[in-house]
Length: 503
Image (tube, rainbow, N blue to C red; front, side, top):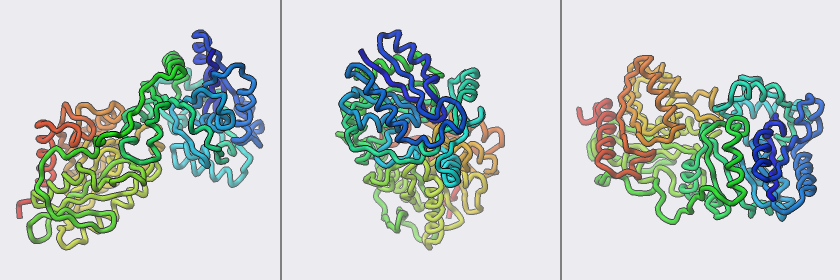
């Protein structure tokens, strides 16, 4: 008989698992919905002195009391930290760990690293400095969205979440997780909630980048499921979560294949382009036309996050090289940049890298600094916000291909400046060229439609080029006539706004 130990996330206790636990018992399993110390809603004083180690030891004692060997540990949000800590100490008793809409923390990681919003992280650190043994107040009803998407949550469930939430002991968030390494070999299942911005496609893309840190996700003992709901599936989709947990315990689920062939982002560009001279300065590459005199420039901004260890880096990926060379073949300077969007918390750093690269490009004597276009790709689309909100005079066009144009839930950027769907209201008459793919992931397509609607409302100069049968990254995935025509149209439109070829 399988025993499921269900560990809740920040500010919540075993009560959030009630429906899931009942469903598991109905299916013949045992279920233990855990309320860790300080999480029973008894007030801030109940949590004083409680830390991550306290919660780990509580789970270890529970594991020791559970009869039988088939124990599945299920951790949601913060709960994955004590789950992995306990599993590391009782690895011989654990048959599988299930991560519910949360990543895999490693040795030395504090749970604070999981908090998506930078303002919230800074708040926790400030409170910890004032009183390291204190608690973080529970969110108000309108604040839960900052911790993860509330999509699918009925109003009464959100109200219950707020009413029963407990202050979170600060040391549970700030104390580093310590692991011996025993947990690393345990079978693992990730339950990805697509409305919160995670999906199997995202995992496969990260594995495909080739960074060694993500290769473990392709191990045979690692499986994945998707649920079309927000960050609290135990409240928004309990029946579906029960089904997934039972399948996970049986070793079922989607397995991500190890990269044995060329990943999609390293496949050839869909067009044959005559090679042009290429120069590298720091993080910036210039692809140069054969013409003399200052020429307009198109700066291509890649997406991400791209792990720091990924090789090759984006400016050497075939799509970016192909675009830059194509632009150069038509008389403009193509620019590719390796910015440092290595994690979701690094958008500010990436924005600084792009601004620095643009200054370098505009100062080059071969570039007409008053005729520059910026072209944003995928998650790099969020970096377009600054330029749309207050376009400088030299910016003649903004382009975007299959972009993310509003922060996805769970990214911790909801209140940040990186919201192109809001920033477009400041674009004025700036031409915007958007390449939209028909086979886009739903969570991204929503942001594109939000942007298109906002652009229409404010009368922005938006041109949309559709690729109905195109996927995200179509330039190396869909080498069709339709795709090639879309690239030609987009490049031709951008260069037209730059006046390329007219002087």
